Length: 127
Image (cartoon, rainbow, N blue to C red):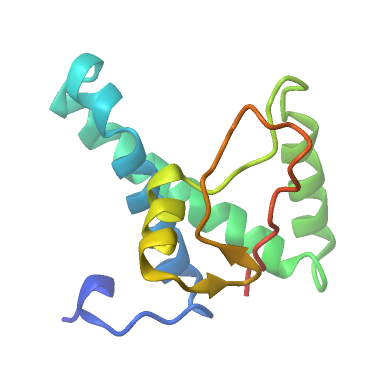
């Protein structure tokens, strides 16, 4: 049986997107993991991250046709702490864009300054 890893990436496949999001999140946590989180705990955290991404994507995708999904998303968004910043692209991704010279969805590979609160945060569509 082919795993998601073995199949060509399909951005319309919510499981693929959740797996990608989980992998990017897990890799972004690597320094914290190496210093503070034992492998046994990461083995518990990794599926929680993937399943949470999948649940969020599934519910968000269904909000146009499901009152339950809309309520679920609204409920989750009520729990976003007021001190959370808007999501930003990871520095490593922006650096790789800069090296490539490409522009992706209006984002050019330029330096990424998280302290610049006036810089608009690119909104990347979820398909």
